[in-house]
Image (tube, rainbow over all chains, first blue to last red; front, side):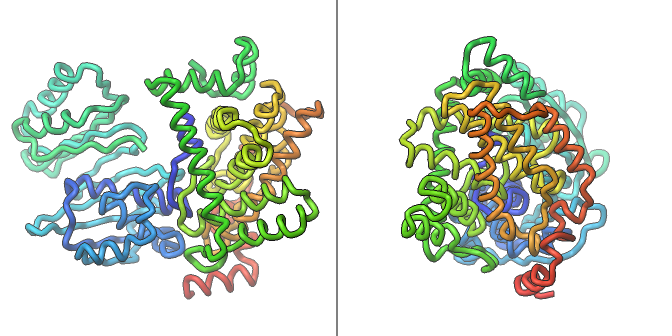
Length: 222
Length: 293
């Protein structure tokens, strides 16, 4: 924790959990899509998100984040209209997700080329979030540290390739948490690597070049 | 490096080194965040700038919340303060009240604010500090620096108690904000580090037990006006501390008491809209008005 966790975030109101946290959940999806504009969004709201989303602007906040706006962007207020202008067809569905945190959203997107992806995350208070699922695979990161997500095929040596790259090319970076999840042996897998310090953007490009890595993204600390 | 495990730690460290708490905290945070003190200061100055923008936005006449339940409070209070030459509270305080209302109203209307420490309690610190800057002519640098003291106290409160209504009730949000603001005010007015702790203790002690009972679960009723009571308590607590009327219970024990009281509060009174004002006949009617059922 630092002093700007208390004096901050600078955000669009009214609620750090239901608005600022929701933007941040949306931004995870924006990163998943590599900043592309989706054609279609299905957004499931669970628990308290489902009950009170309109009064807190949670729907606007999620869409704004998905479109790449930040939690202090004035555009959040007009996010429904901006999404329409951009030709994004979206649907909000109120449905309780069993066992999920009370403030949970599950977002599924479809891109112009027909590819799809999804994320499920909870807003756990003070604008902080916890991401639970990416493309159906279990992850567990809070966004309190800088988080590197590496999508890859489950092959021997991929983890070593990533950490070796970090060791030799980015010697300052210190990993504070590591989590691996996979669909099945040899199938799609995802590494969640939380890092104390702020990695440069070139790390993402370098990781993407590694064998068997399908995508990489960086989610910066709140 | 500071541990932020007790307010006494901050007070003692500042007094030992002959620094203000804010100076100590800025240097410490710069080191912890691997930035220069100037960078950290500039980020805090920008936060204060946003606070001033929120005041201006929130005093617009036609401002309304997303739900339509609230709006215009900052405008009305400012008009009243100006037209009555300060109403009952006097010129300085009545304008400060208008500012706290304005920022909280700006938040409810999806305007830009600085959570301090939360969005629900975001009007208290700006109400106090923008008023000292604009109506008492305190230089910006002193004001911005004092926010480091508020932030450091908030870090201790968050670690040892809570700053979330869902965990500790409104005492954890507006109570913490008032305690933080009181410490800032004392420092700006030239008080000692120890008096900063005293002011925080008095402010927290005066809001122990305050429940979080938002109508329809929205950050509007009673949140917007609770920013005003938090601001009044911050000012009176700071004046008491500066006058030498210290607390009888030390500040860290007040924070511990806040945690215990928060734990003892039933879930219905911790941001679930299950009790208090939220379940009064009018509270229920307003909820139906916004959400249908």
